[in-house]
Amino acid sequence: MHTHLLPLLAVAEEAGSEASHISAWWYGGFALFVLALLLLVTVIMGKGRPHS
Image (cartoon, rainbow, N blue to C red; front, side):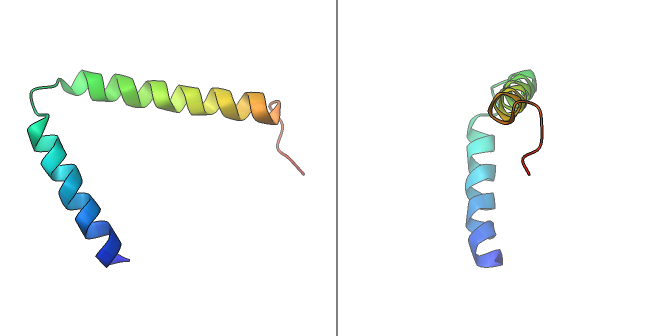
């Protein structure tokens, strides 16, 4: 498992250092947008009820 995660972590750190000029608010806003979108899709697809 570590052999798969460590290269991904290294790539994420490198991308983060290259994009350090972007404000952290953009990352937070984007993450909030993605979470809201996933919640909306979940509610629409599941009609607000868990499937049985």
